[in-house]
Length: 99
Image (cartoon, rainbow, N blue to C red; front, side, top):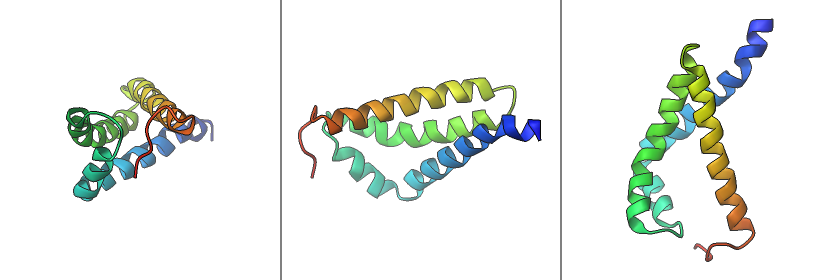
């Protein structure tokens, strides 16, 4: 039971990153359109539309193995922090309204 408690957060993150990464790749045109709809330069949106799904799947892979799990947790914390900060900035009106 102790081992399962230790691995549970990794399992949850693996499921989240696998789902979101695969979803972005399988529906790439819709995902890319969503990136292009964000208030940032198109060059950044182009790069993010390709790298974010790859990073999500890489994090899931890193979390899968105990040897690389620490890096997976670190990357997950970083990616989630960036996402939460971005959403928070949207809530406080730091960006123009997106349609």
